[in-house]
Image (cartoon, rainbow, N blue to C red; front, side, top):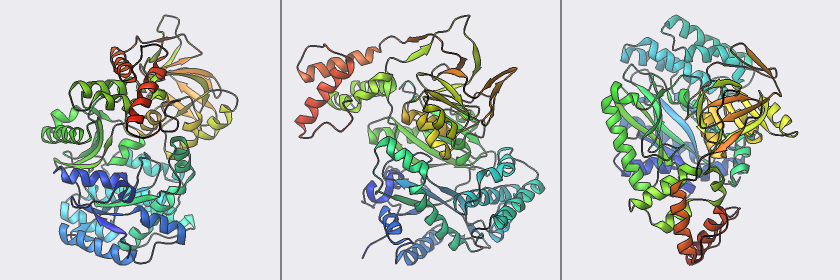
Length: 552
């Protein structure tokens, strides 16, 4: 008989193809002794059965009830309970990482009754109402299909972190009214039914246009399906000693061996990724929450040692206690990827042959990073944070649909207040990306790095008017105006400026020297050709062929 659900336990041996990459990483974290919220995972097999049969598979309901009961017994809480309520997160997780492409629901189980119980337990009505509002807003859009634009006022209440409980309560009533007016499925009152609907919504999001576009760009098969990870909530919005963030063990833009990332205090994880909030540099944790900072550094060291690579983690801290929510290898490209590979080989963590195999020839075009030539004649529209190195020149497109349309006539730069998974087709069509909000680990930055497209985020002076144009200070540019984006320095420039390239990285020279030695030939030809030759030699020694597209 098929088992649909597995615990997030160190003893679980199922591969990422079954557990999904996210849950598989959580199992690794448990084995490393790092703090992970309790939970379970519904396998990719269940997702494939869901699409085959058009419903949740037979037997899943009984397994789900048993898994929830175990979680309740372990946490001494009850899902949606009137005393000591349990709330859970419901997250997607394909075997291959697809950042932000599928649905997530947080705080599930905070019914009206459970919210009152949470307020009584914590003595903090504002926190309980804020958590309930976040749940309703997310459930409405991701599960019930209420349009995100309908919830703009609610988003402002959340981002503004209102301390006025009456204002939050009013926003809750507004969302409940929007759900009633939506005309689709109503909001179930039972937490168990909410969970079933959320699981189905996560499965369904595997076939959304944004997810399909991302898979097509990255060569991910459509028939893999996603797992669903369900975990007990930890609340980054709990108090002033709580928060959330993302961290790389090394700088993803340069490969430097320093922790890099962002943090938000008294917020939940979606606020960082969405880019609607002003994040703080990761190192601010050291002063504000030194215990959390030390725990995070320890976690980064341990996961990097395990994966033998730079790593990315998502984390939350509640009342000064750290919890790690996700881990995966960093997958750096270009100059950063070369630096990490060479530095790890120098440290004896990996061999020189593995260092060569980690650098794809198609990524070498990003090693000599182009920069906009800075001079007095440069017409700078605005500046932000460089999120993905390189220079892109193209016409301004202020919506994803317009980016696709204008790209048929030449390169475009997608300019948005912030991006979301709904913008995936525009991100795919654009040569570069600019956002007014968000930081270097926001959705726009993460996807741009995955696509290898220059990006500038957090250009705070920029105002975007969909379909019309952009404004920065007293300057206005219409849709279709030509701009250039420097993803290293963060400049957004009017026109087509002169571009210069960085000097060749000495680490690249060393990597190519190793490649020539392994290939057994003199160092001639272009960089990609030299690396391709060595990769081919190494792969043939292992009895495999060059992966399709790697030698391009």
